[in-house]
Length: 309
Image: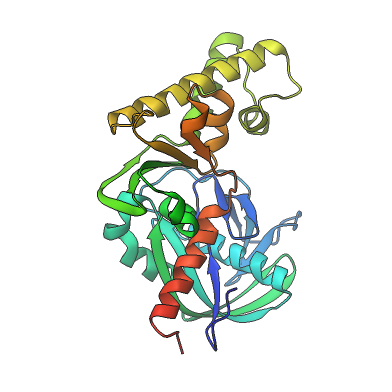
């Protein structure tokens, strides 16, 4: 429930390096700008006289997401998708977003200002016109947001591992409480696995696989390709997951002393290619879990503050 008295609609957005997620949608993090209206208009966004194809191309990793306007355009597309689900074209919105665990304190004010640089905005997405007024924004830590709704289950010692496209975030949650001085962010997201797979296949066979084929194998463990390519992808993915566990052990992960909770888009790699004790690792397969957590945390904060007028 996102309506509180006369408060705005809370829309959570996970600004990932591989995909943008809302509570109900997921689309590729890609933006291509055009000066003229392009031929294909399925995911076309029009803003301030420019045309943007959403989901096209790949957004390169950058520790600072505010280096250009792409994430703002992607934010508008995410809002358009959520308003379309609600069948409304005009709304007052409160944004709930996030940043990697160890970057939140340093970047949250700048990221909030980036998202709210206009009080209101008009844009067209997928042929529908939208008018949005911004009531504010909150920026929360990634990973933790994904489990905020079920902290009651985190008894004892727990390690949370959130594997995204660009980063891997690790934090301890002990007796239902996050441990502030045991949070870590590493540039070891699933894109690193993709790069390793491409390099391995090119080195072994002299061919370049398209990303869609690689992603299918990583997500489902199989694809309609020759066995030798499948073997190469699986072996490289297994090496990447071994690297994840090496990094977790560097942060004192011990399966005999704690539970490991794996969230994010990369959880499927650990599940498909990892070597671990089944009873000690818990997976959250909901790719939108973090975004739902942002909305929950924003709603709780709004309630505690007595709402926004």
